[in-house]
Structure formats: structure tokens, C-alpha cells
Length: 226
Image (cartoon, rainbow, N blue to C red):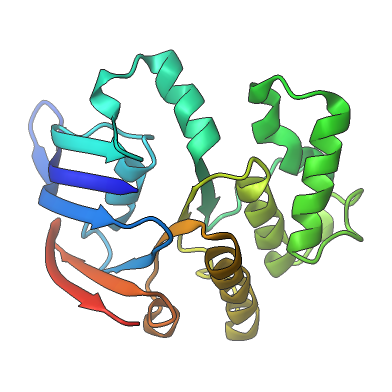
């Protein structure tokens, strides 16, 4: 589902050149749940952003669902990202002035879906994460765990084949973190969604199929867990 070949990412300023990703090659199979771990600053989020087509590599090649992304125009890339990928962030990235239902509908605005269809799909996504009774609430009226559930609903509302999650349990206590992981595991197991998750939590990582460890921008361990 995802193939990275010799990916390198260099950030440059007038005086400094920083190698964030150094020659990483990685395949993620369809239906796999992969976790990525490593110390702060090792390139985990940079790698996830490259997988999610939010950032371009300085070198290397990316294929998503057997399609060579380098050949895409910006417009085609944006459409492909909207249809294939769902994103979950540690800090939720919800819009506080919008109700929960409206936040979840946002990705569908770029698909020319009707208002009725958007409402039906967003309501169904919120039901999957156990928030069907919070449709008219605002994010500021929710707990951290509930806001992360909204973020997951927004990520899955368009039925993406791939979910990329950056520290989805990082701001939560252990009990709520386990609940969020259960939702992701169910999406992977029951709907076949491919998931790549960056985490600092060893216990969460060991609930996934495979663990890749990074150090100083390079891959130094690839461990199959189940």
C-alpha cells in the first residue's frame, strides 16, 4: 500500500543543513498496522508527513497503492490525498468555532458531496467512535479523549484506505489512550484500513503488527510483533 525507496529529507537554511531522513526504504502492506518509534527529533513525524504527501522528500521515490506520486500535479496530489488518506494528530486540529458534526464533515467539502450526504457520512463516522450523542457540541465542550475521537471520525469519514496517526494517544491518560487504540485496532481488523502510527509509548506500539525504530533519521530496527 505504501512503498518508500531511499527517502532522504534535508532542511536547508543559509547557514545550516539538517539531514532529517537518511536513506529510508520501507514497505507497508495493505491492511497492516505499523508503528514507528524513536527518540525526539529522530525524523518520525517527518517520515509520516512524507508518507502522507504533506511534505516532499529531497531524494527518493514514493508509491501509494502502486501509483508513483512524483508524476502527480499539485491538483491531482490534493485529490488523491483527500480520497486515499486520513490524518490523526496529537493536538486534534479541530476548529473550535465549528460543531463536532461540522468538523467531521470538513474532508467531504472537497469531494463535491451534497449537504445531506455529508451529514449522513459524518453521523455514521461519529457513531463508529461512540460520539453519536455529541453531534451539536463544540470541541471546547469535550474532554481530550472525546476530541481525539472526533479527530478519528474526521479521518475516517471519507473511508480512506490509509490512516496516518501522529501520537494519537500522546495527550491522553492510559485508560483513554487504550480506548483510542481499541478504535484504531477495530478499524484495522474489521475494515482492513492500513494504519501507520508514530508513538512514544512502547505498550501502544506492541499492539500493532510491526514496529519500526528510527534513530538520527535512519531506520535501525524492523520488528514483526504479530
